[in-house]
Length: 227
Image (tube, rainbow, N blue to C red):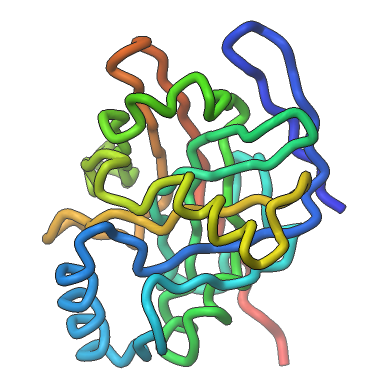
């Protein structure tokens, strides 16, 4: 099993052994916009889900706290998200970047989610401490290239279905237990920005407390296969 270590605002650390990893998809609160996005993806050959929001089980070892993601080709990219982490002492919230294989996505979204890791932040907040102003927390992502960084996603947690919504879903499935990690689904990308970048940085910032949690990593091409 993968064990993640989170630093909390009070300076303490909490270790979590990941037993289950789930990726939400098409999880915007405005489902009319979600349906429009599904139609756009269909034009690119990406199959639509049978229901929305969707939920994709992912191999638990793909929950990682790393500074490098190895990829097999150039058509992969991240997604700015939050991660809900259930522990034996409560629920934590951190930032995440779901790195996705876009070439594989046209054959199956669930397959593409299992091709690369979900990169989680090393810091986390207790959900109970921020629940009353969750919607105001910002979620932004930048891509990195030889010319520098460029903003590619800029939204708030209010654009996505809430952690409490997903906790209810997990409870109904019998999965609301210590070791479960759920990744939120993402917010729209800014048109015209190249998502196939050499690095990703995501930040979740709380305007009430002034605190921010970030995660960043390099995208590392693997050597070409032989055979």
